[in-house]
Image 1 (cartoon, rainbow, N blue to C red):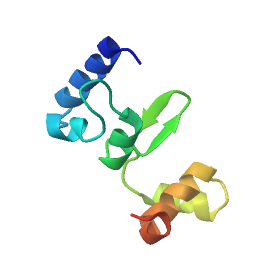
Image 2 (image 1 turned 180 degrees about the vertical axis):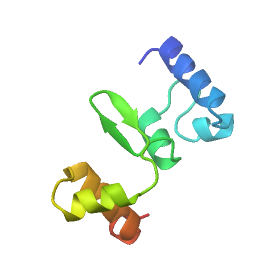
Image 3 (image 1 turned 45 degrees about the vertical axis):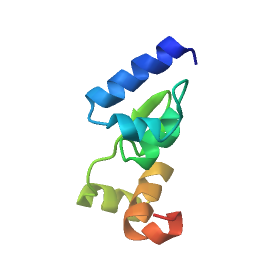
Image 4 (image 1 turned 60 degrees about the horizontal axis):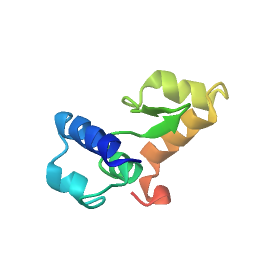
Length: 90
């Protein structure tokens, strides 16, 4: 990633509320690891088809889809992460 692209992403993150110190904690003056930052700081839960995904709250619809075998693997992972966070080191 070139410096200009890195600076544009840095500005977008700060506009979304990320502190400059937080962004700097995932890199240096030249570059930073945006994936590590957005996952570790809770800005996203998943990355799919070139897009970051932030899951909403766990609701009954999700629970019933997973329990009924109609949910996706992502649905099941999301529910498991909510119910058993220690399994994922959170």
